[in-house]
Image 1 (cartoon, helix red, strand yellow):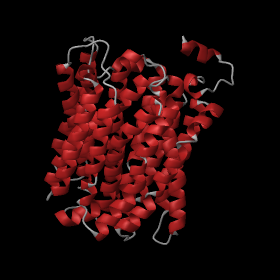
Image 2 (tube, helix red, strand yellow):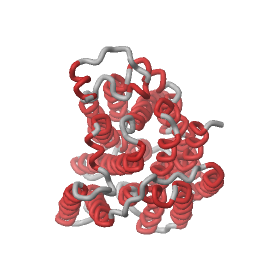
Image 3 (cartoon, one colour):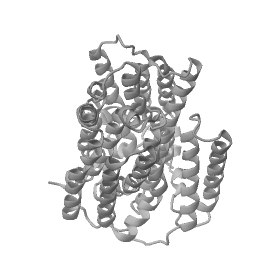
Image 4 (tube, one colour):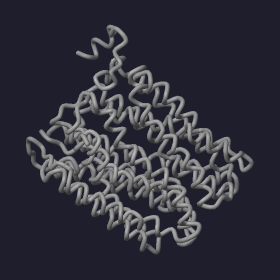
Length: 472
């Protein structure tokens, strides 16, 4: 089996565990909340604490892979994630499960970025879109299995089993990584940017913690704003610091590459909008419509099936229309489908909800596959580890903000209707996140018409004056 297929399939074991955990946990939140005697909305801390840990430790992933080798770091990351999963299954309170999710996040912060780095350094750019499709196809089995499996286990057994099923998958990943992952290291070694790591980690931790607790009445409002302001100041200090060192831990100079900059800005908006859906939809179906976790999971997994079907369609679509056209049009289509659940009511036929979610999953996955490839179109091989670090940090930050935006919208709506969470509490939240998703189209409009043509194979045009200047 060629490396362009074999390596993505191995890395997909890590993605499978991460994606399975995320979708299973969203489905099981109401049941976990009942066990702990907590508000289901407050349990979003179990989601965002994981994202917080990932955002904090991802900056070190590229440097560690360059210094100690991708294979060693990848295996250590899988082991850490599995141990965190076992702890999650043994948790007896919100505090315990949040702490266990942080351990999982430390492992997750190394697994996917390092795995993606192996692929980017081993596969030619003209084969990159297809290779990334192989990476995400097995990984999407996680979201496909997550809602029905999580719903089944939660309804008929115990929600703790949703974490323990990571153990055999992790062991398989360890074996395959040992046998086949190349021990890729950086050609040049740089000193670890300790000051940059402290500034970026503390800044991300404070800012994301502030955004997570905003509107939940978990902390005094003055504390929340202090965290937001303190995090913003530390991140600003990091920006200044990154310009003064030769090898910053997060290389912001990558934003000088237009394809990287535009794809990052557009992707952030897109992920903020889309990232709230896995959190909001199970709560709507279970708290709003009174479904069991299993019934909810059998509906929400349709989005993952649509995503799975898309993976083989991405290369020919790109060859026909090119990156820019597809990203703009698809952002609008995906945003409209993100908003669709706002119109769901208890009387909405299940087949209609399932069909809309399936189509929406197709468009969302198409966007992710394309932007994941475009971000690296013009990045030099020696800067690839820094590029994977920066994109991974941005991805987790956007997902965390998306969950917070969705939760705040539900809280605000329920507060205006007496404080109880009903089916009507979720409609404004879906509209808000859908508009954010559509807003990403304005960022993608700034792409050059020939952006990423080396990977897409789309060359059916003559470059205009603006495009020619951008290429220079």
